[in-house]
Amino acid sequence: MTEHPIATDLIERENAAYEAALERDYEALGEKLARRDIAIDAVRDRVAAFSVAVPSWGVGTGGTRFARFPGPGEPRDIFDKIEDCAVIQQLTRATPTISLHIPWDKAEPARLKEAASRFGLRFDAMNSNTFQDHPGQAHSYKYGSLSHTDAATRAQAVEHNLECIEIGKAVGSKALTVWIGDGSNFPGQSDFARAFERYLSSMKEVYAALPDDWRLFTEHKMYEPAFYSTVVQDWGTNYMIARELGPKAFCLVDLGHHAPNVNIEMIVSRLIQFGKLGGFHFNDSKYGDDDLDAGSIDPYRLFLVFNELVEAEKRGAPGFDPAHMLDQSHNVTDPIESLMVSAIEVTRAFAQALLVDRKALAAFQEENDALMASETLKAAFRTDVGPILAMARLKSGGAVDPVAAYRASGYRAKAAAERPAIIGTGGGIV
Ligand SMILES: [Mn+2]
Image (tube, rainbow, N blue to C red; front, side, top):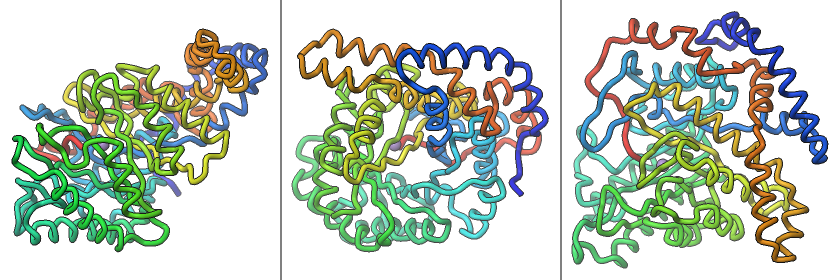
């Protein structure tokens, strides 16, 4: 029997207030879509089956490089985090999995599994952490980890990744995500080729320990914490890594890890075309790796990314099976609310992408009708799919308005009473 952190009768009461209006809105949208030969129930069912993983670190209040302002009722450990993740899943019905970060979330695997399954949750990709030093470790990552000049430091970083795989095996995960902060801050500080060679050699050891049914995701990021050069800085380097390592290695695209204005949807298309798109860390940004809520700055870009994903799925691109994860970190919002909103926005972009008239788009592309091709995409993007998302949640036992239901539940105040404030919690910029 699945436990629910929010009383189900509260959700039912909340939903009842919206239900009649939602039925009318859904019906009206259904008529509109029928004129475009789209069956609304089919879109709703696709939306209901869509999911995105919640990062365990996302439920804590994030920080900046300068300061961290803790919020009330923050999770004290991974078990509190799992409960917060259960709230997000219960209300949105879009986030049945959690992505763990080791060592922040280190605990007895059997207890982790038990805690998650109590709420009907499972574990998504494991995340290793060699971008900061951990208490008791023999070698510092100050000058790098998997690409460090010192063999013992590299071996320690490899060993940590192997441990993440072991924990992942025990909790039922099927993927390891590796992001490293390795790089340099001054020209000449690091030899680009030798550093990359050392990284590849370390990653080959990690890859060799990967179970047959696992995938390895490497995540590129153009800068930060290194500000002159970064070892895994762009999708091209990431693609080379995935090619070098083998068929279980794929590239992970974090939307915030590119230079401003970079055409991310085209990167996505390229990686799909050559069978190396592993998945995403969804978030949004104005300047750099801002880790803002998905779709909060540029929802059209998020839609264009999903347009590529839906297109790839429709044409049956070989090996296409992207993992969806959120990756965000905040100082100014309730993390549970932000993660719910992000999960909804990602699902919204998916729903909009399902509405693209692909036959018309292909014809306009063939005719070089740039204006009508662009308008075809915008017609889908401009469609308010809100009733579809809400109906999918309602049918799956979620909340029509997850943020309103969450606020009505008083969950945060209850958590604040049960969880005394602590000084620090695992969180960061990854
Ligand atoms: Mn990320």
